[in-house]
Amino acid sequence: MSDVQAPEPARFGTILGVAAGEVAVYSSHYPSADRAEYPDRHSYRSYLDGEYMGYKWQCVELARRWLYLNKGYVFDDVPMAYDIFRLRSVRVVKDDRRLPLHAFHNGARRHPEPGCLLIWDEGGEFEVTGHVAVIVEVHADRVCVIEQNVGHHCWPDGQSYSRALPARIDDGGGYWITAQMPGAKILGWMLQTDDATHAVAHEAVDRRLFNLQIGQVENQGQHRAPWLDARQPDEAAFIAKMGGHRLTDREADQYRYFRVSDTALRELRRATNELHAMFMHATQAVLHDDRLLAHFNIPSVLWPRLKVSWDRRRSQMITGRFDFSVSDRGVKVYEYNADSASCHMETGKVQGRWAEHFGCDDGVCPGDGLFDGLIEAWQESGVDDVLHIMHDRDMEETYHARYMKSAIEAAGIPCKMIKGVAGLGWNAQGQVVDADGQPIRWVWKTWAWETALDQLRAECDEDDARRLAEINSGEGSPQPPRLVDVLLRRDVVVFEPLWTLIPSNKAILPILWSMFPKHPYLLDARFALDADFPVEAGYVVKPIAGRCGSNISIFDAHDGLVTETEGRFDQQAQVYQAFFGLPHLGGLNVQVCTFSVGGVYGGACVRVDPSLVITTDSDLLPLRVVEDADLLRA
Image (cartoon, rainbow, N blue to C red):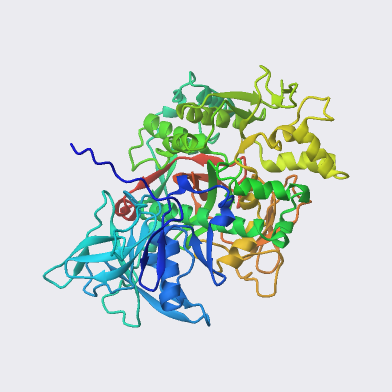
């Protein structure tokens, strides 16, 4: 066995080497980043001549920077590196002209050239994100590439590339590049050229694969027998909320489930990952532009706190939920419940239990990995002490809190549950403590941040700054702590963090549309009904901080009211979103929900309702993922 140890990674920002065109390649060893030099997220953004290159020092940043310095053009912003393979043009920075960009599969007869972008799919070493490198040399048996975020070591003297990858030419003239790293897969290369010979053609997908279907298990009286484990605290609380072992009160629906194809779920997985990144881009834009932030009706005294929350890398989201309409007309997102999302237990546990008891072996459950994903997210959360779970007395919040508690504890984090704010107090140091005198430092909550803000608005209209200072000192508070006193203290880290107010607020939707116009997953959204707003299919009016489907109004193309829901958000500012209806199956409108966990896809479920709007009272019926051929045969 060799005693030679691998060299230490070069410090973050160290120049590892210099490629053609005097393009520096940097170390992206993030643990060694100097917090004084990189104090917040904004300091990690890379610009050249005012043009955004990417995040220091990721693979995408180098690819865009190399093209800019050597070719004068850049590719559009992408959520993940593998998404570059879907782009079909680049933008000349000087005059905004568009030039064609073509993709060539690994093994194509159009061989790569120096300056090509080499694209890896997600998986293995490049799980979730994929990877991109720039090819700088092409030989019959190898290609030499430059790349960032793969290895953090300086190049040997005289070397002008990061590494060489084995390559071969097959009998048909196809050029194949070996991915090398375990589990990694090369999609191919991207080349700016007018010649599309051997390029990837548009691969048509059978749109029928995006249509949901209803399934039915045989009624053998299964619903009359218990199928949840009342010995488990979360399942006992679920039984109490539902009034029995059931997902719905309608007996006819006890045996129903919904089917989605493998292809549709893959698209939903991609959409979840891509949309999370897009919402984060929009959040960044909002928190760096007070004119945009003003749309969100957040007390201005909290704006600095919002920005600090965003800049704290430790305060990352654990989980959120996207709501989609999915059919052969497309996959469209309605909104992102990034703060206090629900339905985790139904997705990650209950729908699987239902399938076991009712004998449904059609396909697989899309929630099977959700619990493990939550465990991993909590393990990476940075919590180093007791985490307090704060929930209301609502029965749904109770089972949701207990389900999350089991994931937190499985991650090795001790936690305590607090129902309401009962038993909270102040210690001599002005800290909020629980009924046992334990200081509250870490919190996961089922309450929405808007609930705390409503309390702040009600109490602090005359002197917001004074009241916020009191909250953080414990002074002027002879009464027991309130929710706002806990969640807005600087010495308390809350999940989901304060900045999730931004992506959860419907005011993000018009901003997102302006940043990514005509994106296939988005619906046109505006702050006002402009003259060019497309109303052919109607439109939806939403309160910016509404929840649970409350105060939603749907209008037809002639401004006629189709339906509306009641609620407590009728005084909120509103946004307008193009109407895109849910698929209607078996008398039910069906909405697909996907969960992001740690920023990536974690599972899926469906919510159903006879009405056009999904609300907090809508049922959640089981979802099963079936093979494409099985769905088309049905």
